[in-house]
Figure 1 (cartoon, rainbow, N blue to C red):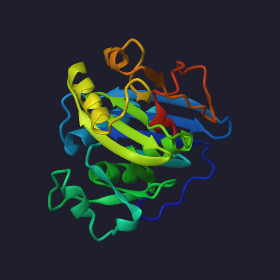
Figure 2 (cartoon, rainbow, N blue to C red):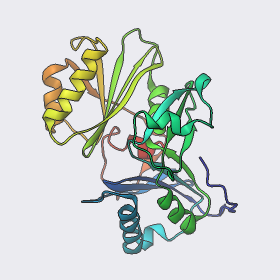
Figure 3 (cartoon, rainbow, N blue to C red):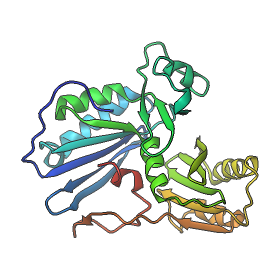
Length: 277
């Protein structure tokens, strides 16, 4: 989705900005298009942010403290909104007149909520969601026109690019602070997408195993890939490996380089941030 007001982008600028926003934090990276190099990549975690107004205040504070990074005219700005206020609709059943009807079954929505949608680029699905409108307005005031999507759209589009036509179902688990997503794909078709909130490893493994059981998948034969904020040292990895035989981290070969100032990180950890340029 692109903001609608007219804005002339600065074509002389060499940098592109990717921002990821949630109530738990802000992440961003900057790509220098001439050197094809990521020159900045940072995460700012938030505590006790429970609503969009508090979120906006935190973002304003970050912009002020790090104006050397954010106070520039970017060639393009892309934003992803992370929340659970989304649902997927098969494209043949979709109508842009029924956005509230799609969302109300799985989410608590208000009369004044702004709803929008993303068309999944490489699948016959539409993602209907509620973005952080006040944050969009803040970013428009700062940068002019920009593109935004729901985080789940970026996650699915890029997973689909990496999948094969295997007869076996493949499970992808994207981990965030206090939230994780499960994506199940079989023969390049989406079998399931769901998002869960958790506060402990017991919560996490319960939701994961319950989903696997409901889909009648075999924990001895299925392939599970982790993405996001997780490493082999994390308890979430250990408890999953106790019950699921084939656990790996999703590997992604990016088309750009990373500057020497950026600490190398596993390719799965910033998957949705780095695939949103």
